[in-house]
Length: 314
Image (cartoon, rainbow, N blue to C red):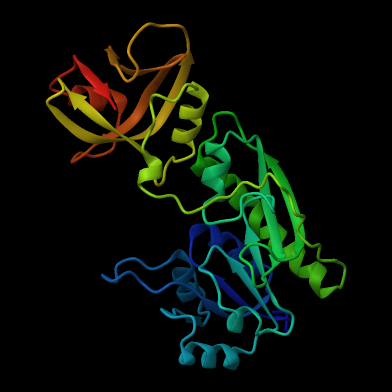
């Protein structure tokens, strides 16, 4: 176990866990972990807490990051540096405490896509490249001095979940590389450039997830749906004979560009295929979930429909 530096790792998600594991496997001195509180029912630990329990690493789960007892415990750990991956906004009192500072791993090429949901938004916006950035945490959110960046290509059919997994696989290595360069004084933090055409990645609301079938671009519709797979997932309203409607979540799709004269939103069911007409082609549903039912592949979903004609989405 390396004696220096004393590290406090801060994170909660599966994305965070990859970096934590890499640090632990390479025997860095993780003196403590900060992660989210358990959910109210107490059934679901964060993946980071579960790992802390398995590896017998001390951890804290503050509800309030300004709580005096939390800061008191942090001072007992006396970290040299803090590493933050996928967590809440830290107050200055916390991120400025270690003498070597605190650095964050962000899943975009900063300054583009600052915010809570960069992986979703790069796909929704049809980008073909993204990556990872490490930076020192400062006053303004996601605007600290850049340490390292790693760029990757986004596949044309890649979903948000697939992109997250791809970024997760390389996240540990960039965290380790950043840490080593800081320790060896071989890194020069770079101020983020002021760019006029900045794109942001705000938290995605339920309203953001509703599909706009009237969009004139089939590509935009396709990008939006895959950018929300598997979570929080795109949704629409499925209408039966204009009398009944239910919420319909969409999880897997493909697109077909072709000329047709059907009204937008018309559903065609052909054998084991469900196609939704849009301007310039069709979006085929491969996996979906009708409100009140389980997520199903399209064959099972169609088999469960009592009505197969005069269906449309809005």
